[in-house]
View 1 (tube, helix red, strand yellow):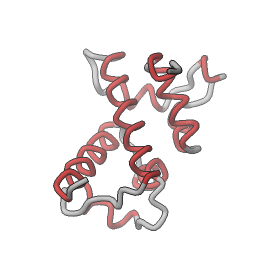
View 2 (cartoon, rainbow, N blue to C red):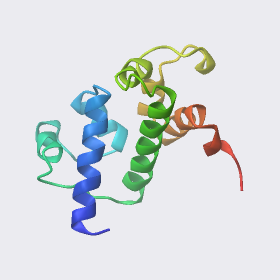
View 3 (cartoon, rainbow, N blue to C red):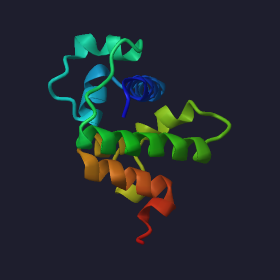
Amino acid sequence: MTEEQKNKLTFRLMKIMELWQLSNQEKITLLDLKSLKSRNLYLYGRGDKSFDFDDSVVKRAEIILGIHESLGTTYPVNRDYAAIWLKRQVKKFKHKVPLEMMLSGEIGMKRVWHFLDCTQGWKN
């Protein structure tokens, strides 16, 4: 990935997480960026810096983009509802909150993505 691609992806991820109204700590946890200080996160949101995209961050970025796209398909008229849905209990998740599942790790993130986009659960 080129530096320009990294910057664009970082900026896009930050915008999505802002739309979801996540706290700085939730953003860091979701991307598994343990070494990043929350006070420096604004630099990434402005497009001044890009994340260090190791395999884990790339995979999580793919899932976040997939969840964002699926929420846009599920709620095409009101994109703001995505932030509400992520923070409400879902019966199919045994009344757990999707955001809490996503923050628990990659498995929780995939579970939310597969729920929103059934094609992700298909096996080759």
